[in-house]
Length: 337
Ligand SMILES: NC(=O)c1ccc[n+]([C@@H]2O[C@H](COP(=O)([O-])OP(=O)(O)OC[C@H]3O[C@@H](n4cnc5c(N)ncnc54)[C@H](O)[C@@H]3O)[C@@H](O)[C@H]2O)c1
Ligand SMILES: O=P(O)(O)OC[C@H](O)CO
Image (cartoon, rainbow, N blue to C red; front, top):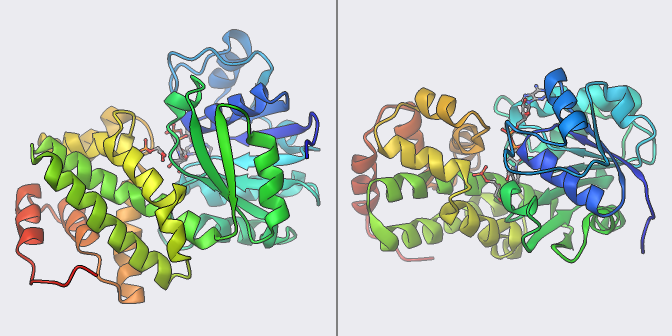
C-alpha cells in the first residue's frame, strides 16, 4: 500500500545517510538531510553533491539539507537515523523535542553502544521514552552506499517487533533497484549487521597478508558460526543469520572493495597502526568498536568467539596478525558444529 509523498528526515549526511536520502527522493518523498556541518549542508543544497563522502555522485535536487534538527524532523512522517554507533545516543536525544507521536523511526546503524553494550534500538528506545519501542525499525543487509547511489540492484531487510512498522518502512524505500524485505527479528538483524564488521576486518587482514581464498572462506564460515552463537544467545532467530542481515552482509563486507572494514584490515596488514588507518580512511569503521563490544558480550554470555578474540588482541593488545592466524589454526581439535 503506497503512502503517497510524505516528509522524511535523514540524520546524518554521511555516506549511508546520503544514499538512503537518495532512495527516498527517487521514490518521490520530501527529504530533509540533517548534518551538523554547515558547509556540507550548503554544498548539498547548492551543488547537489556530498563530496567528502560520495565524491562521484550527483544528488537529487529535491534533497534539502539543513543544520536545524527542528526543520528536518518537525512534522516528518518518518525519521531515518543513520549516525555512527558512537553518536547514536546524542542524535536520538536531539530528535526528542521534534518527534511526532505517529512518526516512523527507522535506524540503519551497525554497532553497539560501547559502554552499555546495548543494541542501537535499545539506545533509541531509552532516548525516546514516549515512543512505542515496538515501532522502532532497524534497516540492515548487504548495501554499500557507493552502489546504492548508482542504483545498482540491492536487497535489504527492515525489522520491527510490530510488523506494520516494518511494512511502512518497506513501503517508503522499495523500488525496482532497491528490494526491501521485512522481518520481525530485531535482535538478529541488529546483531548480524554489527558483528559481520569484525569478520570483514579479519578478511581484510587475511587478504592483506596474502593468505588466499581458502583462508577467507574459512573466516566467513567460522565467522558466521560465532556470529550465530552470540546472536542466538542474545535472543536472535538462527534463521536470520542465513539471511540478508547475516550471510548476505557478511559476504559483501568481506569481499567488496567498498568496505571500510575490509580496507582497514588490509591496511593493518601492511603494518599501519590503527590510528593511521582510521585517519587515512576518514570514515567510520564500525568493526573496531564492535570488536571491543563483542569481546565483552562473549564473556558476558559465555560464548566462544575465537576470531573476535584474536582480532581484539591484534587491534588492542599489539599482537602480530600472522601469530593470531597461527594461534587460530593451532587451537584444540573441534567438532564442526
Ligand atoms: N557506508 C555504507 O555503505 C553503509 C551501509 C550500511 C550501513 N552503514 C552504517 O551506517 C552508519 C553510518 O555510516 P556511514 O557510512 O554513513 O559513515 P560515514 O563515515 O560515511 O559518515 C558518518 C557521518 O556521521 C557524522 N557524525 C559523526 N558523529 C556525529 C555526531 N555526534 N553528531 C552528528 N553527526 C555525526 C560525521 O560527520 C559524518 O557525516 C554506520 O553504522 C555504518 O555501519 C553504512
Ligand atoms: O563499508 P563498511 O565496511 O562499513 O560496510 C558497509 C555496509 O555495512 C555493507 O553492507
